[in-house]
Amino acid sequence: MTDQSAPDERGAPRLTTREAAELLGVKPETVYAYVSRGQLNSARAAGGRGSTFDADEVRALARRSGRRDASPAGSDPAFRTGITLIEGDRCFFRGVDATELARRYSYEEVAEWLWTGELRPGARFTAAAGTLAAARRTVGALPAHSGSTDRLRVAVTAAAATDPLRFDLSTEAVLSSARSLIPTLVGALPTLGDPEDRGGSLARELWSRLTAEPADAPSLAVLNAALALLIDHDLAASTLAARVAASARAHPYAVVSAGLGVLEGPLHGAASGLAHRMLREAVDRGSAVPVVADHLRTGRRVPGLGHRLYRGEDPRATTLFALLEDVPQAAGALAAAREVVETTARHAPLHANIDLALAVLSVSRGMPADAGETVFAVSRTAGWIAHALEEYGERPLRIRPSGQYTGPRPPQPLPAL
Image (cartoon, rainbow, N blue to C red; front, side, top):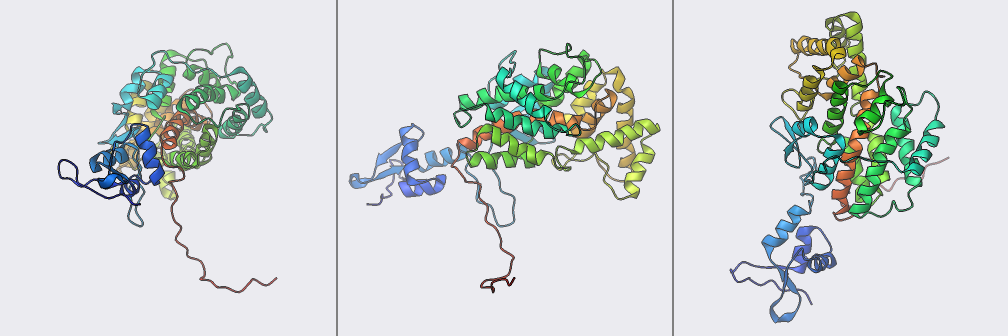
């Protein structure tokens, strides 16, 4: 027997189980699961057959659960998320200004804030010894010309293979895996600097994998801030890939692998390498003017400039530029970066983005061109985990767009050999 709608004591109509399920985008059985968990209240329908639900309460649950809005054909799909808001040329992590978090807290502390909404002062991540050893052996078997993202991808796979509990998608298990995986990724990278110049924060551990130059407090502050600022940035391409994987209930290591696969594109994580090469050339030539002119003359976009989400300068870049002022070795690259912006502004109103700020750090401290991509990948791993946790709470396989077929209409004859 189907439920019967009936007005509540205020005279407002109540929803049937089927209507509530449609609004929530779930099966009717799931509606009763929400009731059993205390997430919804139900009342018996008139005559005692079936249940009814308060419409406002169901709508509130739909908002909390991040149900995807129905979007018109051709528009961008929208996902409700409580992680990152970009608004008014500012970026917020769970409502707190991301640049303030990055200035005040370590990467690990910001990651915990992103995952749980709670601050864990002094948080430090530790790799499991067996997992780290497996990741190092796997990375060590790669060809010498392998890039940092190649190494990170195989390190994730090795870490997954050593974790028999990786299919446990409970929040506690996922966070435990994440707290071990991130330092495993760093520890699996080859050491370039003094192996004794390590320990403590993740930023210090990563430093010796990025350059042979010794670490100093101002430079470490820049690297830590970069890690914290890059941790998430709404539904970027790699984050969307991570959420699709999580929607299929892939384990957290597979979610990170999905993100890394997209990150390597030149329009995403690899963009910082282009900015590094341009800035290196500008420093070597003593002026950014001819370098910018070469890009414009050949029709190439000037890397490190412009961002679709900000009208002015990327606030993350602004923060890093300010911190780079305290790094004496960065003076030349910082001046060159400013000249790039000023020269390009004569032709197009473009502002610096975080790729240009990362390039200042990598060029000035003897890092390779892919250093920015490495920082991006390590940092964003925590963001992908945060989005996976959100997606694990959603209806499985909800991210399923429909294809618009443009091929020949059937029936077609069988192809001849």
